[in-house]
Each structure stands twice: as structure tokens, then as C-alpha cells.
Length: 307
Image (cartoon, rainbow, N blue to C red; front, side, top):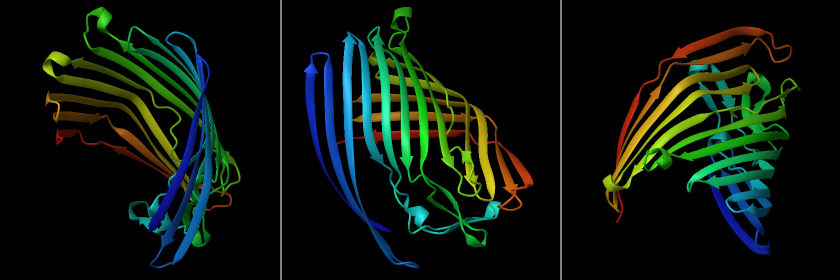
């Protein structure tokens, strides 16, 4: 696979009032993807990506942002070639006709700042998705990654950053965030409405961090109480559910050009589930496979030097 890409853009800013700014622009993107080997094919794409953002500050430390934009997804070269998963007895066909996913995004965000570095942010986003990339049924019992039609995404994002200096925890911050996603697309096998594969419905996270400037040290602890994901294939539905994921890190910067970082990741057990159907027409359940996974604990040390 080979891709040649070019882009041109223009941008303008209008300060309507001291507390209201409007930004507008457009990007013109052209690309050519060439495939050689078992199939020789070349496809060219051209997309215009307009963008409009308005920023309103009704009062100090409070801001409302509105965004309307067209975004273009990046194709995965691996989806153009056939592959197989021998562990699950699954064969995936390649798709030389794959088109990039397009999104028309409408987003509204309210952000309030307090106590210096404190932030409360609430955002709602709606995506109209064109050419959703998911799993397509093929003849001969095969499937492939392909464009399955249009879909939607509705997202609510909440982010809270609480500085802890006022309670004597100098340089400390407590962070809470979550993103709730609701997606819809028509399944190409069943014709029914379902979620888009690989989009997590929710994933809350909590973290505690501290910057100790006198020691040239930063540390952070993060906790994810639960996480899950589902994928839809013409012959099966698969996914995983997990909980209690911990991550801890500490970074020491003895100089401005040297950083030493140690990190530890701890997973509790999580479960994978695969529902396999006997056929693609009536889709009776042939069997359900569940696996309890005991993941390893990861340790990492990284040394970075800049010149």
C-alpha cells in the first residue's frame, strides 16, 4: 500500500465583540492510494473540510464554545488485505474499495475555571457519520472491513479538575472524567439498528497527581472502575468487560533536557465473550464462549534525553 496526500487550507478570525470570537476555515485534502500485489488498484479522493468555531465568554473564567466541522477518518492499510484469526476460526477478506469515513460534527461545550487551575467542563457532541467503517458480510462465509452505510454518534463528556492546594496538598490535582457514547448504524447482515463496533458506551476515570517543583518530580495515580467494548461481525458478536484498572507513574527531571519515568499498570481479571451464530439468515446461537483473562502487570522505565 502507498498513499500520496496533499492539503491546502485557509483560516480567518473575526472578533465580533470583546467577549465573542468567530473562527472559520476550510481545508482541501487530496490523496491517492495505490495497492499492488495480489490486486493492482489505484483510487483518488478529494474532500473539502469546512470548520466554524464560535467562542463566547459571558463572564470571567466562563466560556461557551460551539463547533461545526467536517472531519475525515484515516484509513488503516491493514484493512485492504485479507487476514485470519486462527484462534477463533475466523477469516477476514480484504477490501480494496474501502472509502474513508466522513463526519459532520456539531459540538457545544461549557467550561468554567476556578481556584486557578480548577476546571469544570461539560460538552455535548453529535456526529452525522457517512460511510461508517465496520464489518461487511461476503460470499462464502467470509467477512471484511467495509463501509456499511451512514450512522450517528451522540456523546456527552464531563471533565472536572480540582486543585488541592487549598487543603494543603501543594501542587496536587484530582481529576474526574467520563464520556458517554450512543451510536447507531444499520447492520448490513440483519438490517437492524445497532451500535458501531469498537465504540465504548462509557469509560469513567479518576486520577490523583502532584507536581513537586522543589524535587523536580511529578507523580500520578489513575483508576478506571470499568471498561467494556463490543464488536459486531456477520457470524458472531464479541467483546470484553473489565474492571479495576490501575496505573501509577513517577517522573524525575534533574535537568531541562533529561527525564526519567517509571510506570506500573495493574489489571484485575476481565472477561471476553463471543456469541457465534449458526447461520447469517435466522442467526440462531450456535454457542457462547467466555474466557476469564488474568492479564500481566506491566512495569516500564523510560529515559528521555533531548539535544
